[in-house]
Length: 113
Image (cartoon, rainbow, N blue to C red; front, side, top):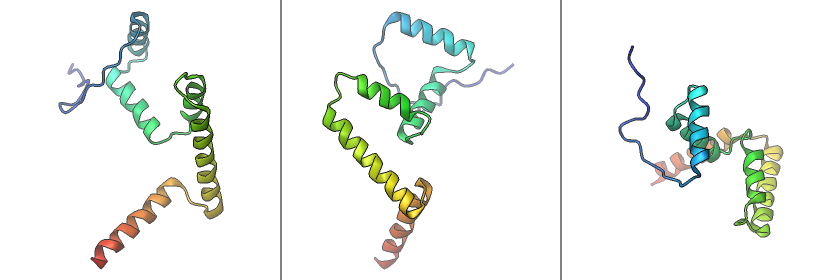
């Protein structure tokens, strides 16, 4: 039986210090769920970068509890998110449609030049 490749050859490493017990428990849980660390962290990073709504409550929770977080940053972030949602509601556009509009504008700009 061929073993699946855990990570591609061009993979980059992100190293984060953590408690030994957290590392051990993570390895056990991932093994139990039959998930590689590479896949787990890449999917988590993609969800975070794509502003996945399923991940948003968790991110909000850790931001609020973080000592590094400032109240004004949270308020500004909340205001930006509200403005974004207002625009989506007003024009009925989702993120993909907004990106498509920018792609069209970019192509049209290239044609002019």
